[in-house]
Image (cartoon, rainbow, N blue to C red; front, top):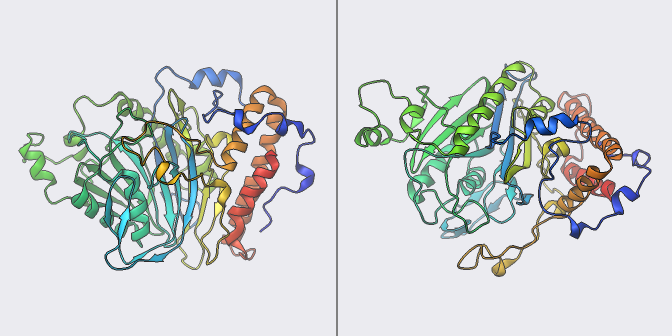
Length: 466
């Protein structure tokens, strides 16, 4: 496939890209919430004093999708100075008795794990979102419930995302993996690279070529809802009410014993388990959840990868977020064709703010070319995350694409006209990739040499910035 910039489309003013050192750029989302093409009034309009803050996951299943595809999308909203990397791990076999080292604890390893591609905070083992070579995608969200967050280290929700992908060959199989691990090991631990406490429980959106599952947890308890058609989104909310497809066997008895449910009336999980005094973050996220639902409904019946990308870039709803200490640090969109003879396509930004980033396609293959320029440096036993006490210092986790992207954004702040021209070229590349992939999925062009597509796009993007 040829979705790369030809040399003649590169900007003539090369000094735009070499006038500032990478090392001088802060590892943050820059202050402007959009590309230079956005009117200046938008900046003040969307940087609200109390902007909705949360992650958002989306899915569209036929007939919500335009084609016979399942479309998955997620924005990962994290501390603004946190670097998100995109990593690939091949399928593997493991000796009996092996242990798996997660972010904070070890658990028994299984005999075989699937190949995965993950978008993850560089400091931890797990992932915010990702996919496996079986056509499964998972994303998670922070949530708080009446069940208290237990202190101490356990499995992070992000660890559960990765383990579910490594071990689940369908959305339901991944769900059973996650719920089983919740029962055995619980969930908890510091959720950001900082000594200031920040922990939460999790909700998950698990998707495959045929269906989706919403999994919402409260400590070791859980409830799940199956989604077979149409559109669905989740944020930092409990969204499952009475439409329960599966649940923890002790869910209702615990709710009754705690006095949260009388055992007689209708069991509404969201109503029963939502905290009486929810955190401000959870309350503000209601606006995002509503905005995401409205955007999906506007496109119901016509959702494509391009539509999903536009939803993730939406600033008025707060879905493309830049508020206080948090911003969208990574984004993902996946196309899962119902036809199993066609490959699944997974798009990642590997850079902050999807409105100022481009989505690059990854396709599983037998021998994918390693894309080391979106992988952060490793620090081994000297990593402040591994030392006790943890998080007493910081290290530079920026990967090559992150550095180049931040330099470009910084210069776009000072040279908006040239920045707009660059943005147009970047989006042309993305549009060309989307068109060619759509043609490939439609049988119009062959899908050869797909394994190097992500490498080629990342390499070209960095060369363009330089």
